[in-house]
Image (spheres, rainbow, N blue to C red):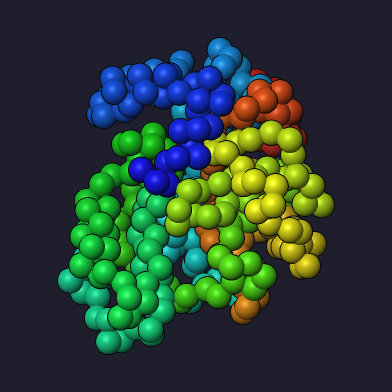
Length: 310
């Protein structure tokens, strides 16, 4: 519950809390993907969603989920095969090292892993655990990982990118933060190789917070999906921000649209993952004009032409 605090407060602030509750109670557990999708679109926003004539950022993401298909998206949604793809494009030095791959937690041999490392799954969102021998409750984490690999994430998220991924647990090198006390997510929204906006994810262990920014690392007076940190807690512009933005654009140039997640570590910039439907298309903005402003950036992509049959 602790991690949901800023999200709940955000929903209250954005006047969508009761819509969220209605969805969670009545629709979210339905295995009828179409029924769940329709009700979620109706309940989540402060405007009438039109997926068939997308204009806002979220409408385009929902359109991609509903109508677009691309095998490369599937390959890159898998956190392991995504590494292979990025390696083939020359990004090896930015890819965190994989230390082991397992079909279940029973195969994990802790003696073969360093004192600190990461355990995660390749097929979903949120199953990421920072581990330290002598400190971590591995029994609890192993149980969570084994439960995660039993789930078909595409059913609940409605994202076709994940539907053919074989769930796997893997260990990854521990990443030491460069400038902050925690490992911060820098998430860049890249349209045709250009960063148009992004957000910082921080305080993930306690109460996840997002802060929107635009190119040059200029914070935006609007909140997205979660509350943003208090002003005193906002991450300062990284000294190597321009390098991070260039890398995001180099990776993003391989797609018409993608969210590129980066970490700033003592071993250099590392790529976290690639995402094609951020927040599954339900990342509401407290000021809906930003949703439509960012939707304008899709006009230079294949998705605009396909959605509007140009």
